[in-house]
Image (tube, rainbow, N blue to C red; front, side, top):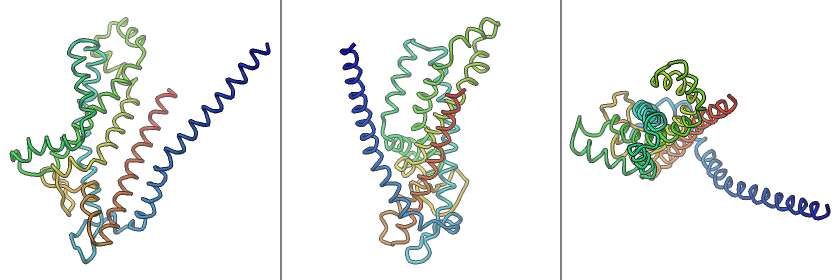
Length: 287
């Protein structure tokens, strides 16, 4: 009995030490994040105003620099088109891997390609679209839809991997019950599997969108930078990352302040998307 008590006390001490080390590591990891958020709030909040969000950049170095309306609109439009391209394709790839290909040779090859695409730097996707669509002059020069393609390539492996993980969590008993009722495989997939996994798929989609919204390099090579607001994806379009890139190196303090304000707006957008994704993920776990 004495030996068991001593062992239990030793385990409790080790548990407390381990918990303290984990708490310390978490605190150390949160310090840089807290400093970044503090610095962004300190530098960016001063630039926020109604004028800041409702006017376009003027291009003036000495006068009123304008706001970031065109950058916000361009970011939303470009990322929305990218999501329309990447999400159906990514979910389709995940459905093939989980419901049809499984452990086949083609499925293993597709998984390998997805893993490779996940590790490719975003600038490589931008250069690929730049060389294949911009330099060759297909449908004009720089255009918003070309930026959307670059971002869609970036989002595709994230959506596919997230959807595959969620689809694998759907209980096999649900599929077997549907098959026992005589439902064909395609109906089982779209009437049972996909609705069950939908909250998780939405979570992965929002995380992919949040990642794509903050990318700068692909848009610099494909959509370029303009001042005016436009909804025409066939023309050059502005975006928040590109606007920040252009303003932050300027010698004019008001342009640098606009860059900080745009950076804070971009972080707020991504934070909002991430929070929505986490809420959907929590709802999926509770269900």
